Image (cartoon, rainbow, N blue to C red; front, top):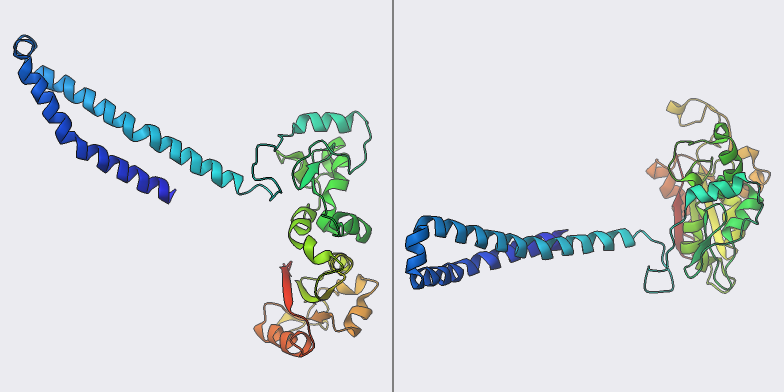
Length: 304
């Protein structure tokens, strides 16, 4: 938009700079046609000439300017598309959500990984949900998340029942039907951005999650990132007590994970308030920034 504005200012100044020459040419024409000026009136002729010049100037000003502004808007919209192997976005297909709804309600069962689009980094299944395909050698975040029952990938599986009964939808009024059920579609961005770290041939690295909760997401990360030394922080596993004493009065959510004690014993689950810089500094210096530790590569802030 800044470039478009600069272009408009330059274009306006260029047109204005040509006005004196245009005016001289019109005056020359006026002098060469004395009879017409006499019959029509000099004043009226100049007004008409001025109107013509102004109309032409406006056309020169707005026509290319609008084209440039629209081009900028199109480029900005394209920047929100997922990255892909091709250098063009012309292969993106618009999904008719109403048609997808009819397919589900009609009872035609299709596999969740069945696709209706190709050519990008992923595809859309029969319900209109977009999935990113793992590249060769990468693990599948969605499949792993289904097994750990994390909310990070739970929305696609809840979509069919949501479409059959709005009462089962968390957000029934969303225009995009895939956004209506409880849960998320985080597998798309995680597969796209973290997929290379899920390979068996990557160098060891550290991963930090802020917000363990019940550990479904952490379990997913551990399986998805086998070469990662995965750490997580959670406030709910602090000793029970009032918050003004640095404790937690609302129950230990983290303890519901069957591997809760294992993660504590491995010094991978760190109990404390991640808003507290002293806590962050202590975990970093004492548990993560060890002489033999791999470099920290990924941090996901999923804290409330």
